Length: 173
Image (cartoon, rainbow, N blue to C red):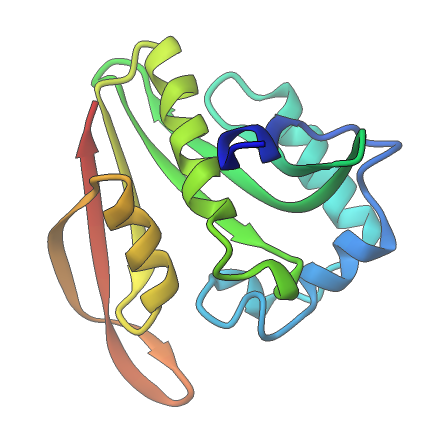
């Protein structure tokens, strides 16, 4: 089985996919140390509300990343496309793998390849992603998908009491 066949993306199901495992990811400081999610104490209620909003949105699309394993699909993380500006045909992406033992295995790279296909089907011509400058893992997966560093927003974020740059990556589709 090729790596491509090992994952699938699909919209999250409110009754099946919003689990205690998902809740634990959202409240795990390691999973979200380089995201703004670390500032929120998540509950199953607010996760369901967020997923419902994205499922009903016309310009933000949230997908679960599912690992195919022995005819079973295990939810391992999420990837979001949006908000999308359909006038300028551009959108943002954000992603995470919640299953820490699967970090560095190439699943995020594959998920981004899939979200690029979805973005193209929606007529988008450009994608962008922002990341904390010290987030080497996200930088690598973006570069593997031919995203280019387009700018550095100086002293944009605070991390552990110090100011850091926010790096903006982009990809022309």
